[in-house]
Every structure is written in structure tokens, then in C-alpha cells.
Length: 355
Image 1 (cartoon, rainbow, N blue to C red):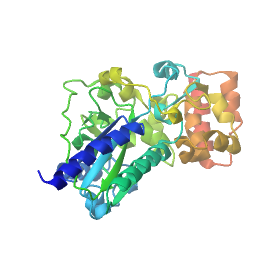
Image 2 (image 1 turned 30 degrees about the vertical axis):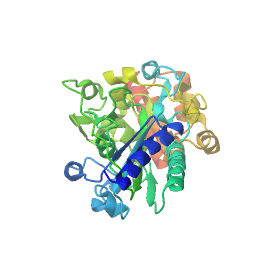
Image 3 (image 1 turned 90 degrees about the vertical axis):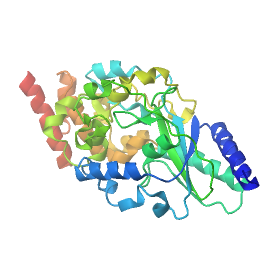
């Protein structure tokens, strides 16, 4: 090993130490070879499983060849940051209470894009103070990056059958982020898979979106339907969505590895505005100004008010019939948005049909 190799080996140790001091749960380093992942991603696109997420297909090989996205990239520093909030109401309990709004646990606090990106930048600032000629770019679910494939190669976990990353000692309740860099750092050993014969995530999925182990048809996924899809939610999925108004955690909730999951130490991910246990009628009553005020700084803000009302209307259509629910829906029968009106009409019809 040369002096240069020794220096980069020490720098890798320092980067992991600095990253953990910033709050990252774990840091791994890998190279940029993603040949098998590129093949799998292209096959997924060709099946149309990305739905209306056109950005998943439009960047060509930049997604699977890091040096095409950021020239001179030799290594990827992959990080994970726990987000499971402390003291949040039990998810299954909220899901079972038809008049409550279930929001994916990752969205109960501050928008993770901002939190993770800020920490990654701080880490890069520290690296820059230690080396010359550093080139880098930071990412967190914000560009054509195969986050899970890179994290798996960097040793942070394995891709579960639900396609999310699972860590043997810490479950899957965490965000991922990356630093693309020109530094020739030593790389870590990839993680090994430990799903075995377990199919719990496939069996629990309300819309059967996990069409095969390690393969999700996003067009059926509740997270896609409530977040990524900007048009009408297909009727065949509306009753299956239940009261899940922003995302869906069922596949993670049932995963046996999440018995090892730790609550986050990041206060930005703690519950805001009581979103862990809020009723559908209350959410539906918000004006656009109230929505913007309450959701400011939240990942939920990104879907916008109209889509929020669309999702809540579906939840109200699946709620227990009551004067409060019917009255809430009636207030938006003539909503300015045709999208909202259509979902409200469906919801009211559900109550009439089930009466």
C-alpha cells in the first residue's frame, strides 16, 4: 500500500466518523459499477411499471452510470439516516380507524430532502477542508441516482422483496443519500441478502403492487397513487387505499427485520401538527392557505392542495358513514377543481351504495 493509499484509507475512516457525528446512522463507500442494476432498471421501465414517473426513464444511462451524470466520479459515499419518529401513534391502530388519516411515517416531520442534503453538504465541507482537488455532488432522492443499488453495494443493507433497503441490524425506516466524488477511496463490502423465504410484504400489500419478489408495479402502489400520480386515482384501487392519504407503510410495518429499527435522533423528523393521528374531516376542511401553512417544510407540501383534497376524498369515501363525513364531502361537491369534484362524487356514491 502506498502512502497515497494509506491517506485515502484514513480519509475513509474520517469520513465515516464525521458523518456519524452529523447524525448519519451509517456510511458506506462503493465504486460506480452498476451493470446488473442497469439491466434490471431497464427491464422495469420496459414493462411500464414506472407509470407516469417519466423522469425514471428520460435520463438514459445517467441513472446507472454515475460518471455520466457527474464527470470524474470514481466513488459514491452512501449514507442512511433513521426517520422513525418517537411517540407516534401506532400505525396499525391508525389504519384500522377508518375516520383517521394515515400518513406515511417518513412524512410526519420536516421534508427529508432538506435535512439530508444539508447534512451531506456539511460532510462535504469537512472533506474539503482535509483534501485538495475535491470534486463532488450531493443527492437525496433528487436526481437520476439508483440509491438502493448503490447503498447495497456500499454495504448499508440489501434490497428487500418490497425493493426497499433493509439493514439486518436496523430494519428499513431510514432515508438514503449520496455523495458522488472523484476521490479514489477504498470501497466497502456489499451487503448480503436475508429475506429468505419470507413473503410477508408481498402478502400484505393492499393493492398487490409487489408483483413478484424484488419487483414493484408502481402503477398499483399506494405511495405512487397518492403522491406521484397527478391525475385521477383509478377506481379499482380506491377502496383498497382505505384511509392511506399520503403514502403507505404496510410492507415495512409487516417486515420482521423492523423489530430492530431504532427511533430517530433527528428532531426534524419528529411528528408535527399531530399528523400521526388526525381525522379525515379535519384535513378536508383546511383552506389552501391552511394547507400551505401547516405543510410548509413538509414533504407533503410537494403534492399540492388539489392532490391532497383528492386523496382525502378517497379516504372519506372509505370512512364510516356519518353526518360529519357526508357533510364534509358535500362542502366540496362544487369544488373549483374537476379532479376533486370527481373524487368527492365517487366518495358520496360509496356511502349511498353501502347505506
